[in-house]
Every structure is written in C-alpha cells, then in structure tokens.
Length: 81
Image (tube, rainbow, N blue to C red; front, side, top):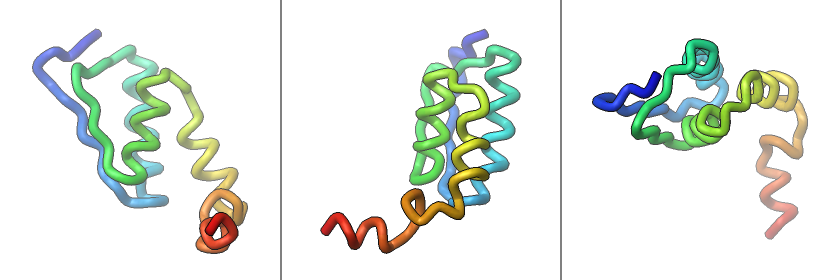
C-alpha cells in the first residue's frame, strides 16, 4: 500500500535508531510504502535498507557489527586519511 499523501522522515541517533529499524520492519511486513523517504545520519542508512526492501538488515548491522572497529570508530577513519 502506497501512502501518497504521506512522507517518512527518519532521524539521527546512532544506536537509538534501532527503534526506527523495528518500525521499518513493521512497514515492510505490512507492505506499507511512502511517496517520500528522507533520512538524517543513521536515519539515511535505515532508509536505504527500507527502500531496498532488505528485511532484517538494519537490525543485523546495528546489533552484530556495533563492536567491530571497522564498522564504527575514529580509527577506521583515521586509517583512510
């Protein structure tokens, strides 16, 4: 079901975005789509998974990779500079 008169804005929040991931999972299960989807920081990552219909990806990435320094650390950025 496409909600034509409604857009979706996904917030930033790092690990707090896992709550957003659960809501997006519900939308995927119920096949609810939006005409516009906008994301800020972590919300943009959540939006990409939602728009590409990757069920479970947001949860997997945020829970299983959070302790991996390659996923989220200043060291991983520093090594690229």
